[in-house]
Length: 424
Ligand code: AMP
Image (cartoon, rainbow, N blue to C red; front, side, top):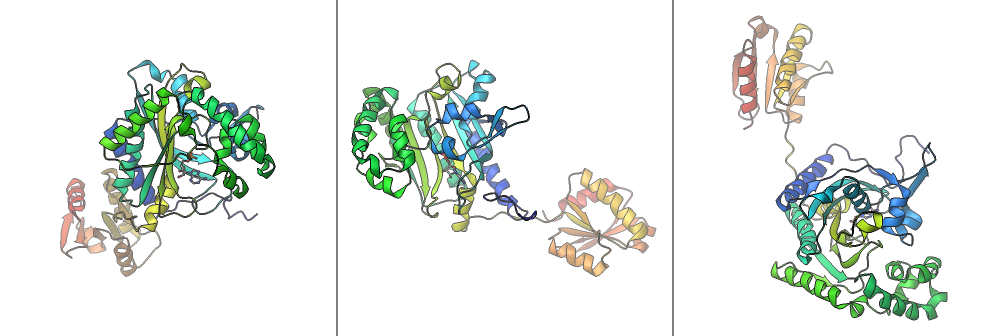
């Protein structure tokens, strides 16, 4: 293993790319503010049990994909594979439900899953998620869809589609489970090993299997929507009514189940036409049982997670990644020696005023320094010539219109104003 190669499935985000990430983060924060969602930051690792209980033992993530290890105190620790279970843990531990409900929170940060890396699928990736806890109002389900759609819209993304389903509550799932076992049992021999074991433990997980052999059998399986109880049907129809009234287009997909056991009732996924096999740019749903499962009071909740890496890939595919890369306010050209010291002092002051100021550290010629200033798209150049310095002056050259003015160094506040006004 070469020391210079990063672990498989991870990415470096380097200057030239980070700008897109920061721009997207800003858009996310702006939309969250409009919807009243407050940021929460939880640890990158948690006790393994949180995910085993929260996500569910029979899920792909818990069975095959978690980065789990014993720490030096022999505790089983897991790098978070998703953000909802940690957020719910923090909601309970910090008693966040004691105030006005619903509590609306968002998170943004890296997640870790030991998956087979490919374009759009990594072992470390970033998710943004919004979660509303404390209400079962179907309008909140719709808000959990509308908020990320607003983010996609703010980025200029097109060609995406919302897929929607309801997977009911534990009550209506009982009858459905029986039907699934009845349907799959005669096909047991054709199912993959994981599905054979899931058939007994959690038959709904079969519907999520990507193995080709299983897929063919899954196609003929009964769909959950036929087994919803009256309350779940009402809730689902409420969600659809609000979506229609808010003119949010969606497609019903009765086969959508999602890869976590905590979902109840509404589930949704947004797919982009821009991406290949990894085309989901976000997904979510209602999880009315999770807070209680993790140890809190029964609390209905709903949320959504955006795959930020994939969203950026989709935007790149549509040529929508553009940020205005600004240059420094000033490039200070010096001749070494005393002029370099004066330039350093001036840069020190201008930077304390919040201005982006660059100066040469490579002993370049004046001509090469001017070239560097141009390459960096500096708004102005300040020349610290020996003759000018003898008069305690510098020459400020506006790089846009070429105008030059002499400025006395006695009043650095004045210089700071001139530099700040350049390029405006
Ligand atoms: P999930 O947490 O599995 O519901 O995924 C929510 C979103 O996160 C997906 O729609 C993807 O956009 C993104 N995502 C999930 N897993 C990965 C991964 N391994 N690499 C990159 N993005 C991912």
